Length: 194
Length: 194
DNA sequence: GGCAGCATGTAACGTGTTACATGATTTC
DNA sequence: GAAATCATGTAACACGTTACATGCTGCC
Image 1 (tube, rainbow over the protein chains, first blue to last red):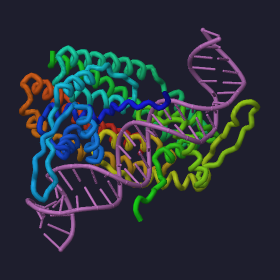
Image 2: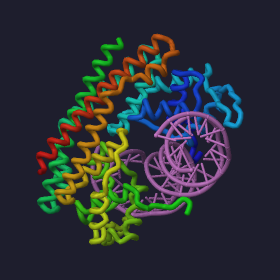
Image 3: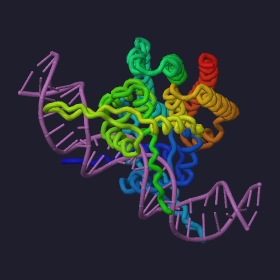
């Protein structure tokens, strides 16, 4: 069954959650809110959004009302359907796969900011998963010693070598501290929600 | 001249910098070091690395020696050429374009950890650009009030609405604090290099 | 005997970006 | 009068991921 297609892109679910938050929204306005508000974590082009809305419509997860306007393109205002709510909930409660990269962490926090409509228990479970994963990651990193990196530049000229290591050691400190801050942040957030 | 190709992908320059750090390295080992050491910021598949090395060879920026082995694929050990050093330096000193997304910030820090071979002044200039950009971003964010977000969920049911806002306010605090930490971090790093 | 790692690659596919196409309204 | 914003979309291209292809070595 070579090359099977999943058809479940992340963008589709992000749009679905945003349409749920704010019914009767156009594709154009969805891009604005994405680029403004989730802007730190995520951004999308209109050329991605329009086909995504088409896919969601074909799957029956959203529907739109057409606002006819003269000498301008018609407005399409989208709202979520019952099936869409089920699909959104099932996406939100699907267990998150942690991978220990900053990119993956961004996805975790992006999903977190879309979780307001989920059940309380689902949200708390999601946060608990995050606390477990990020504190584990922090503990692993705390044991790390940059030995691989030191060896990697062993043959390089001493001035360059020392500059590489200075930057890397600083970066290492920052990542460790940031991970620790994120864990504490998740714990505070959990307290404020429960 | 519709659809012009640049041919200057970031991966090519990352590989170029790594080969410069550690001469006589194979494609396979390049992936290992990328996934281990730059792993937080960046990762690459072998199926991207092999074509990238081919491109670099064709442009004369790297060359390889063939280590013949029986009943196993031959090893290709890459090293940087004089032209490669020029290309790497010119990439490293090209002014960084800031965009105020976490993704863009990752690129900034990735380039920073590859800068050990650059001139001292170039490295300090790069750090200064970062300090200016991130503190500006921090100041902009400090003035932000989540008004757009509050309005966006005005129509949603009150329980969901309050959960969205709680998460978003926490996230906002974290981002502001993190930006501030990064600026202080860059200032400390600058002090330790100069 | 199976699975992970070493070592090279190509082909297909999915996702994201830039360019093209159209055209009115508002702001500088 | 030029540029940005509103509003929809398609086409081409660049980049990233998964699958395919091959085959030896070392470990459990």
